[in-house]
Length: 237
Image (cartoon, rainbow, N blue to C red):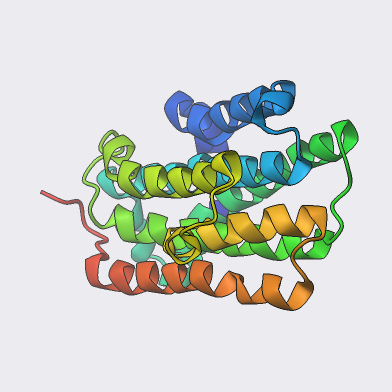
């Protein structure tokens, strides 16, 4: 799996479109939020929650979907399956670099949020929800991959889930409206956004924060079940 991961990391950097989705676009949005943090309410939790959703959405969800579609289209997956490497090892080798790169980006950007603002009260809870959001978007990537014929199509097939997640994050963080809490939490990543904002300020206790991982993990489970049904190693025609 490790040699696949190393090769995938090199291929990711060579593909300008994928590299832009994985690196430039998330970081550009992060810099924008930090620079304009006063216009977004100024609170570190608000900025952090938006960055986590957007950066994981671009860096994991869209990038992983594009990567898997590209490797299937070029028949790389088919060739790898003819080797002794297990299916899980193949997928792990392709996806681990994407996730690791995104986590490193998030650590850098969140460190910048702390340096320009305040330290999170419950940092461990923020970390738990980062992991939950990463798992959710990775599961969505596996599911969406089954509906994506070409790497170019990934820019379209990933939009519904990405827009839902971004919409939920903006609804919760920028409007401050809590009149429809159940609906907000039911949207992809919505519960984690609420938990991250509260964990940063200390208004969400640990037990409640852990319970708020359940909706996000439920989305991950639904996406994995969909991925099993839609899974295709061969190119779509």
